[in-house]
Length: 100
Image (cartoon, rainbow, N blue to C red; front, side, top):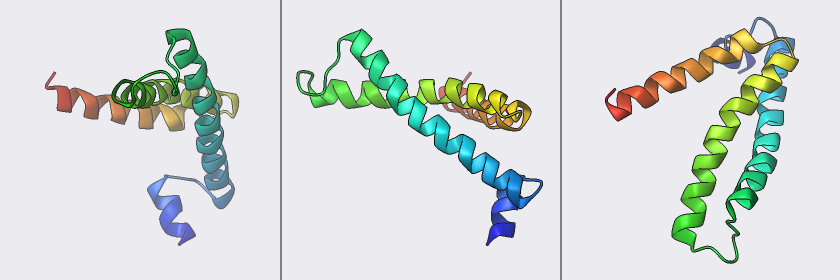
């Protein structure tokens, strides 16, 4: 099982795989907190904003914020090059979907 994960995430070792998971986890936690701040700045509150506006905006904000935080956290751990590949792959997929 670990070998499949190492292959899927292109980890050099089990320790490197653990570091990759740590970076993903920290980025996720920080992104949720940061997206709350962004929604507060936009004046959107879960209790006062309609569900059809709040949740799509929250998900979009979370998605964008996560990409930036993932790169920042990975740079702090010296893994920027490894994670920039994920971000570039995601950008290419978005371009294919949008038709550009």
